[in-house]
Image (cartoon, rainbow, N blue to C red):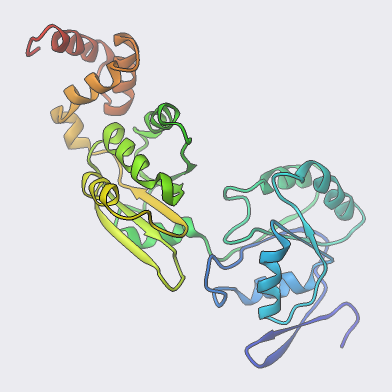
Length: 298
């Protein structure tokens, strides 16, 4: 074996990974099925001078599956301030650093972006090692437009903040993608229905795993289903279709939207939020809300 090479296994075949050139490597790992790993990812995990990961216990399972024996360094939300400078020091010393998350592509809902920013600022090369992503996996099977999409991460826990966040993204002209916890799914779907309107959507659960499931329908249908169903298990991705332009133009549910918003905020602000969500004039919507409150048709 040449100097610097490390061994790993693909099936029954023993492979050799050469030492990586100095750089920060962002290595995507499987989101459930351990076979969803690329050969380049294995080479990077085996060949880097330093291997940093979110949870050493989780990454250890992947490494053992492919016969990779490495010391691991934890890098996560709670120790980034301490571990980050150590990794930058290693890069400054001309060493290679591979970073992986527990599952999927680094930097998606994890603190890796801080390390990348520090590495770029210090003049180091950052190399993507692409692979699995629950965001793109869910979008690919959702049956929704995929030419434009926005990843919104996790919604806030509290209902008022959740609805405010949904209002912020309501007019984005593309499919919206959210992560959600099983116990908050029903409440989030209900909030999405109220704020975004009855758009087509999909709930993807346990992607690439044994109990993988994709449920498609309108937000009203999905909200009704999960309001009655047992709390689902596993990791969940929710995809919601783009704004329904024709519905906004025809004023479908605008009255309901105005009245719902006006329950929690002054009329002027409610009209402004409705304007963001529908593309209609704030002044016209304000007058419409006043008319509704006065019992007029408008």
